[in-house]
Length: 311
Image (cartoon, rainbow, N blue to C red; front, side, top):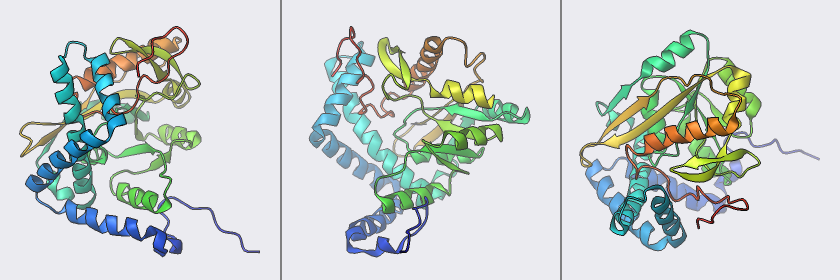
């Protein structure tokens, strides 16, 4: 009896030509066409699609509005509504920016600036790996691409459920990242850090308390992952905050990469203090461009006994 080899990321399979995948192939061609459109057209489409998503993705819209109400209590109802809508528009802009990074990378020429690159260079010069503490930005892989213009990043990723979609994303990302590390491959992640690599890692989502602790995020307790503490302790890597964002005229945008100094005494002996510290760094980053963050994720979904329910 023949045995099928397990699927390897980025590996083509003849089964991808079966009719059940034809819709995805058509979508791939369509996305490639979108990537060569002028930015003025992409920008208009993003606004249309963002407004449609805001109207019809009711659950995501409610989550976004609630998150912004909790994190920005100083905003009026009108400001919350306006910024919530902009989150969806920025998400759609990020899709086009990612397509440009994959298929039309020349579009970013002369649009990118960076601040603090010396912090990564100094750590690597001392033989350290670098764990880049980032966020789930709506820029998606466009952020990784602009970083790759200045240094060689690796990325931690979660495989797609659809094998053909996973193939597409994996191969497109291969043009940006040196290595793509499965989120379950902790040994591989530690190995790359010990080898001096810079790895983009986002500790900003709620995965419950089996993988984290409760720590304040914009003044409200949130389940905060602590896995990076273990990674840093084992690998002796430097923890360096990284943030990238779009700014300037939306019709002729620019992109900036902000790299902050390596965190001293990270990890410490207090995991709650470390989680609080990282959350505060992320807060400060998000205040630069608040709507360029995936607020439609339920950041406060874990509510242990004694904590007020958010959603």
